[in-house]
Length: 323
Image (cartoon, rainbow, N blue to C red; front, side):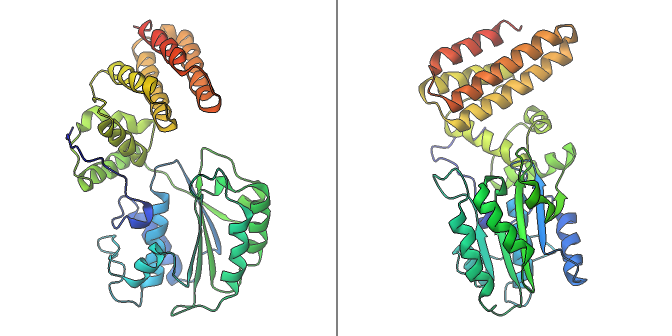
């Protein structure tokens, strides 16, 4: 692992200039555009960290930059950072683009954001006769905002597209889902490895590929990248022994509890118990019981103001006795 005093940060989806792994998906939607067959409302579903938002930003940039200078490069699947649509979108001033997402510190997408859609839809378009609404993390729409969105989707207006992005780990209202054409985004393990290798190269990171590739059975390339950067930024060593990583992470969480660290701990625990089941299937009942007990403890830690240190010690004790 590279040791660097400067903390690494994940580039936001709207600023990701390169797109990895989505060649076929992007080409498919470009063909739909050329045939004028793109649905008015599209729901992109898939696991968190799969790059759904990055993909949609690239797709939108292709649509809006077709007749502009420094337009989208379909050969390299890349956005030109001097393109006017890219600059306007990242500054949230593009007249043909409207973004809705979870704001900082909010726990839901509120109806006020949806109400602003009406003004956007009624405005005349600029340069291209197309309006695109992107709604990220649609699972965070509350009931009122979901119902308001339904009205907008049902009467979208001419040349208006809705792109909704959904973390498939969470449910959304069936009424919203039924108004959209759903595209389930999925990658094989080998494809995930290819994407992840591109990502660590792009971030100039050096990790043992054989050591971490199995994690991609349990999580997405984006989540794995965040996990490894989290370890590096917090000086938690990446070991070949998964229990060593778990115990080092537990020691960190005893001092500084945070939801991100707890999520990564649950990921490591899942991988550990999967390995144990492969090694000793006779103890499967005990493994399943302890695995779910630990997951419940971690979930309770996220929800309630509990004695974190004692719970983490209990988890550590359970794991030590598994070997």
